[in-house]
Image (cartoon, rainbow, N blue to C red; front, top):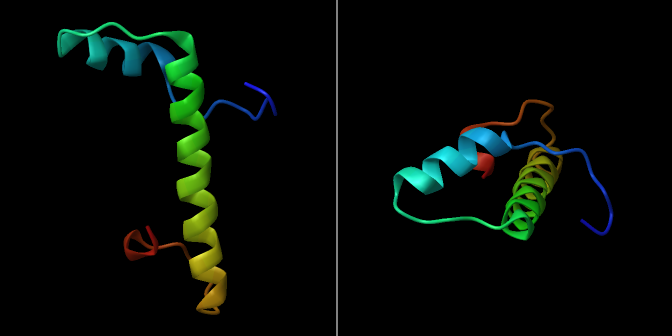
Length: 61
């Protein structure tokens, strides 16, 4: 990963789920998934703050 953010996903559980669906996964796919999780969280946090709240809610996603 280029910017080396902390991993938020559990790689072993993610790999196990993908394998259970009959697919294989490369490490760069997990890096991209982690980046997308950060993007989702950042967007939800922005929405929370824009609405003058400090509690992130499900509808912020």
